[in-house]
Image 1: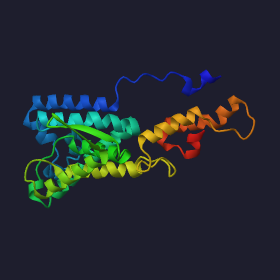
Image 2: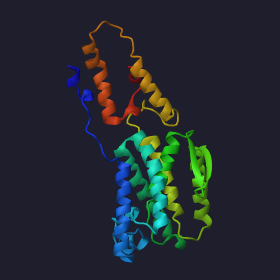
Image 3: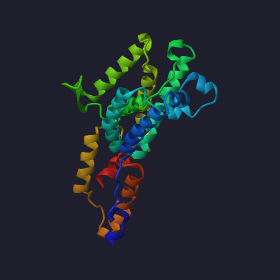
Image 4: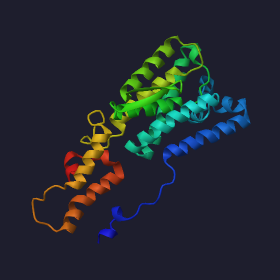
Length: 270
């Protein structure tokens, strides 16, 4: 019976997305950081000295600390908009892997350069590297997607996602070379490079799967919708139940395991 198949059952309701969980976690950690005081940043913030002392956990914990309220707000906004978008395209688990990996690699690059460039050797806190990884991933997945941002929270400016990536990259590179402030530009660049690499290689389960730089998310979703409306013509006479069992079930299992972007062209037509 069709109602016995897994894809016909009502899936359990998911109350919180992975992005929402991360947002709540960042706010909660900021509140705890304010209660503990400067000691939290000295213990959990990422630093050259900390890694020398074997505090490897700092590569994770620094991503949940912030240097102030506006630092937190900026990262929350970036995570809210780009986290939800990337999560829809890659799934919650892949989005979380991308976010944490971007933060970790970005932090490593920042402190690594700190060994050779003293002005970059200060402590690092913040989710910026992870957020920049999400921005880069989204711009790679949907380079022509129109984005509207409010400059100074007043002036709306619309441009393509790939332009945002270019601007962010140039600003970070210039800041890395000349800025003497307390912004971790190297971590931002590391996060962006990780986001691009993750989308192009790590997030594709099969060689024939959807290549993000060749098809936009809108095209993928439209193709999937049309495939459902126009099933492939059967070359032989088989019963509907047999066709579903033989042709449709394996594809639905594949979507459940790897996402719709893992399907080949022939599977999308079915």
